[in-house]
Structures are given as structure tokens and as C-alpha cells.
Image (cartoon, rainbow, N blue to C red):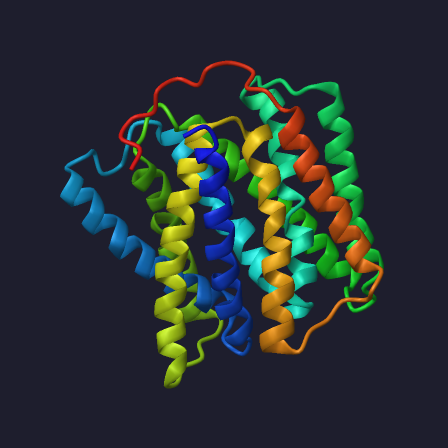
Length: 289
């Protein structure tokens, strides 16, 4: 399937949008507590899956697996903070600067090449994100900064995933996030703050953990399938998911001019896909599910 990687990243983005809905709904639950529950559920699934597959538990490329785990945990914690402090669509668009950082970092870490016109398209997409932010006065500069830093750290995590695509099974790559996050966020729950979930909130926390697992698996498969400069720009489609969820469930809307920025982003993504050619054949991945 020629566009398998694009299909995987679109499915991952949709599933992540549902995760973000759960986080937004659980606004009164501390962020570290949400990350903790998410990590416990994900770690449980990963351990069961790895034992079933009979693959090495700690994987092979330990250095980059640890980078992926720490960077992923930090970026997600910061992103969840922005979800709680600004409209869902705005938080998502700021986070989606991460594909640009991913590609920029990949030119150094992965020695990937991109066509000159793609740099222009990335800049246009980035400008579209800034347009959306600029027209939304509800976003503070503090949380704008948190969002941008989260996007940059996400770029590090995504490159860590790509570094492991020929050495480790995707489920192992996914597992390193909860393996690191569970003890760290669990300690935060004990020492900083804890709010006991009530009723339906338990179901949302369970759903959050399961959906995150699905989203991470498909994101990892996407990055194991093709180059980041082809795959990552399609994460911008998640902006549309966020707009719909925010409008339907949280009575959120964006200024009319923000939709111009959304159009700019989508146009840049489509044009990037049209001009992009694989730089080189990817090496075979090991045990991609």
C-alpha cells in the first residue's frame, strides 16, 4: 500500500483527538494524575503484549528508547496543561508545530533530506498555525510558550521513534513512555496532589489509556513506514478533529479569521504530499505489527 504511512498517521491523529477530549472533560483532575492513569493502563497493555510476543522486554536500542520515553512524557504533560488552559483547537494547533521540529531535527539526527520547496511549505504551515493563535486572544503567552516547548520536545520523541525503527518492535518503543512516566507521575500524585475520580470519570480515564495505546501504535507504525517529512505534516489534520470536538462538546469556537489559518495549514500539507518523493528506501523494520 503506497500511502500506508499516511493512513496510519491520520488514524493516529483521530484517536489522539479522542484522547484530548477525555483530557478536556477531566479538567479538574490534576495533569500529572491523568498522565499517571494513562501510563498505568498503557504499561499494563504493553507488558501483556510483549510477553505474548516473546520479544526482549527492554529492547535493544536502549539509548534512543530512553530518549523517546523521557521526551514523550515531558511533551505530553506540557500538552495536557495547554489543553486545560485554552480552547482545544488552539492547543492542538500550537502542538502541531511538532512536525516542523521533527523534520528540522531529522535533518541532523537522521540525515534526512527535503526539497527546497518543502522548507517553504513548512514555513507556510507554521505561519498558518501562528495565524490561528494570533486571532485567538484567549491564549496567554505563558501557555503559548509551554505549547511551543512541548512541540519541540515532541520532535525529539518522534526522532527517537525513528531511530528505533530497525532495532525494536513498535510495542517496545511505545512501552518506554509508560515505563518512565508511571513511577515519575505516580510520585507526583503522592507528593503534590491527588483528586479521587468519580463515577463516569473512571470510564474516561480507562478509555483515555486504551485510546492512547492505539494512537501510539499507529503513530509508531507510520514513522516506521516512511520518512518524517512525508508522514508528520499530516498530523495537522488533527486541527479539524479538535475544532469539531471543541464546538460540539465544549461550546468552543474560534474567530472567523482563524479559519483562514486552518486553510493555509491544510493547503501546505497537501502540497507537501504532492511534491515529496522518498529520499531513499527505508531499511526493513523488525516485527512491525
